[in-house]
Image (cartoon, rainbow, N blue to C red; front, side, top):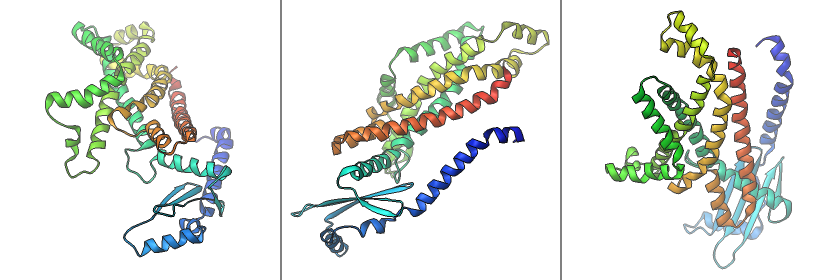
Length: 338
C-alpha cells in the first residue's frame, strides 16, 4: 500500500484496531459459565447438585456466550417451578430476571439463536448469508451467459434466452421454490435428502438448502441477465467497430474490451440484487429452512416477546452494511475502466 493511501486510511485503520482491541479486552474480562452458575440461589443450587447424581434432570440450563457478553437461564420442572437468569459482562454477573438486565439477557439469547452459534450451517444468519452469497454468485455467472445469449445475432439462442428471462421474472419466486422442491422430485422420483445419504441426520435440511439455492440462483440469473445486458449495451458501439477494424473476434472484443468496462456499471445493480435476495431469503420458511426471519418469528411465538425483532433488524443491517462495503470497494477497484 502506498504511503498516500496508508495516510488516507490511517484513521479508519486506527479506529478498527481500537474497536478490535476493546472487544478482545471485554471478551477476556467476560465472566465464564461457572461464574454465572455460582450466582444461583441456594434452592436452585441444591436442585443442580441433585441433578448431578440423578438421571432425571429437573433443571434446564441455557447458556449463551456472545463475543463480549454471556447469558445463563435456569428453569426447573416439577412441583417447585423456579427460573433464574444472569448476564455476565465486564467481569461482573448481573441478575437478569427483571428491568434493563432482563432486556439485555433476552437480546443476547435472541441474537445467539439467530446467528446459529453452536448450531450447524443451516441455521439463522449463517443460512441467510450463505444462501444470498451463493445465489448472487451463481446468478451473475448464469446471467452473463443469458445476457450474451439474448444479445446474440443467433435468433434461436436469443429467443431461448429471452424466454428464460421472461419466465423467471414473470413468475413468483415462492412458486419457483415449490416447483424445485416439490414438483421436480415428484416428476423424476427422488427426494432432495437422498443426495446426502440416509445416515446423515441433517440430510433433510441440507437437501432443502440445495433446492432453495437452485431456485434462487435460477431466479437471480434472470434478473442479473438484464443487469449485464444493459451494462454491455451501454458501451459505445464505436468500440465494437474499432475492435472489428483491428481484426479482433467477437469473443476477444467482449472479454478484453466490453465486459471489463461493463463490470463497474453493473456493480451497483448487482449490489441491489444482493440486498433483494437477502430479503427474499425469508421465503425459505416454506420448505422448513430456518433463516433469520423464520428463527426470530419462532422465538417470538414460543416466548411471546416482540423484542426479538430488534436484534433481527440489527443483524440484517450489519450484513447489508458489510456487503455494501465490499461492493463499494469492488466498484472503486474497477473504476479504472471508466
